[in-house]
Length: 367
Ligand SMILES: Nc1ncnc2c1ncn2[C@@H]1O[C@H](COP(=O)(O)OP(=O)(O)OP(=O)(O)O)[C@@H](O)[C@H]1O
Ligand SMILES: [Mg+2]
Image 1 (cartoon, helix red, strand yellow):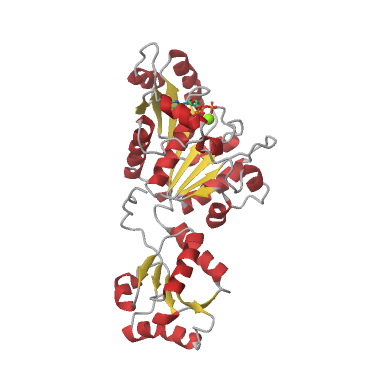
Image 2 (tube, helix red, strand yellow):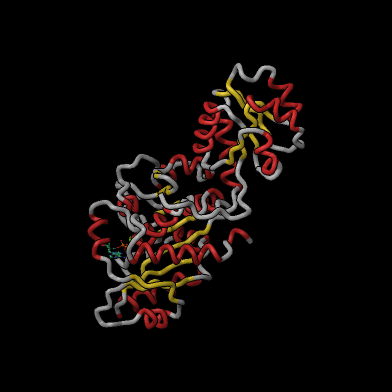
């Protein structure tokens, strides 16, 4: 696994104070279930600098007396946590260290997962996430592969990523990743609910590997995707993830328009061919009013030697990047290998550059 992209300086993580290995393992498991990382301190001395800024502090029962002696200042969202039997007389100590709650394991596990999940939703970089939409200038342009590549590249950099398949006719984006066997909810299951989507339960319900979570179609009967479901999903993802990648259909339905409007940036993939450019002009005309930052990615080969800059100029859009032909990628896709998974090759390099470019720009939701 490559090193994690440096966290933004404002990213604050929940703080766990314990030297009890078993309790620590338990809490790390719950934090992972809640979708957040944590900071660790074995004792109050190690915790002092992070005590006040942490969005949530869990004091292990083994460190309660030490925290009391350390006279750490009172702060909101402090929890005393331990296994049953460890916490007598927990309430008294809790009061003395200023803890609002006493969490007794295992009974308090679900409650703690929710507290961790709240923190995950509040984390900058997870809220608001960068949202990038990808669409093809013509059929088979390479939009879904670019969307998959962007999501895989972001997750390789250990950014919490959601890849959303917004194309009901696309055949399922899970197939692009080779994930069709992975368990988890797909759109038809999600839209069956009342439309409300909260970030932690969304992330827990979807197929995932490492930092990448995918919301795709299944191979069942074609279903209409309500715009409300898309709006709720993107809203939840913006609060709960670092990066959201939306793979949009060329024929924008209501859900795709909502997704495009939510995107900080949209990329239109156009093969370097005359007719593809003409087709892309039609797509641009429909998409441009819904996204202030629309740019073109030109994919080779260029049988008529059409240059990427000419394609971009013809479309009246900035050129975000180019893709050289990558025959090995097609073979890999057929074998179920995710695009850009090795971090090498033209697609992986472009994806990294596009994500770097987005990291420098302010997210719309940050306004
Ligand atoms: N960067 C690439 N390098 C080589 N081949 C690619 C690349 N991107 C896509 N392809 C090939 O083109 C095919 C179509 O790609 P993809 O499904 O991404 O296009 P699309 O624009 O999403 O199409 P659709 O109109 O179905 O949504 C892929 O199956 C793959 O064979
Ligand atoms: Mg597609």
